[in-house]
Length: 416
Image (cartoon, helix red, strand yellow):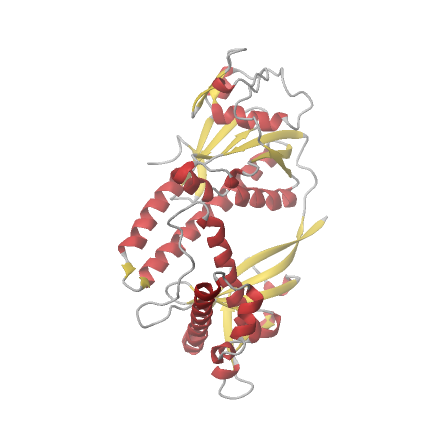
């Protein structure tokens, strides 16, 4: 059976010298549209006490000269991104006093090279010759048929002539040069069910995921994520300019984002592969209902906001669908305090962050493993009474992310 999915493929531009000036102009124009719209939103905020919605901003911006620097759909996309940024700020400001609204895209007297998105009317793709034609706005055309013709190269295993549809193309400045991102609809063959076994996942902040397989528990800590965030955040602040983020600062942000994305993809790939190899056809993932609506204090709210539980679930879901593993979202209510052996739900059983001691049956184990086992038992026919030894729960395997290989390995295999 086949399923349709969305994938993004990166293409390096082979004729960079021929098109870089044109792409620079488009990127500068996107920043200008953003800045004018941001200034407009600021004025309306001061006068009316509210931020204009996406439709109002688009209607106003269409009367501005800079709107025609880009293809109409590309200009619209800039406003959509600004509206999304304001929405994210609305969500944050209720929790964090220091949350800042989206700023201006300006470095001193210059503007950064913003990403430019070309929708259906803005590009023409020639996959047979690995070329794509990108539209300019009316203001940047020297004649009516003026456009940018980019020659690109993708990874050897990617053939864009085989995708169902290229939905849009993005010109992205990666800090050193321009590259193309092709957002495509692709058809993927799915496997039959990987097996009849069931596994459970407890999602956390320190241990990003804890997986309870039928015969083993595995912890996947987030140490490398924490180290990356500390390093690149420091690099970002060290290079902050007087008039906003410097180019080095923006590069640090991009590198951190790329590393986080690689980590989460590798993590979820590893878990789904483990499921397939162990005959697990169903994976129950803990879902913290309304966790971000609760107040956990200033420090706690910051941690919860950066907690990527929804992202992990989405990655697991689509990767599992392709490989025959059904991924279920299950409410995690009471799973952290309930004993996975006898079902006792005394709150004091959770002695401390990483330790669970059952006052009824004497189970002693890792608290995250106990929670993951409870998630597994939400799907199994016999929720309690199975023989889960203290040794198994108390001493799980630990798989760490190895930077050198870019994969997860057991703690013993990772060279510090």
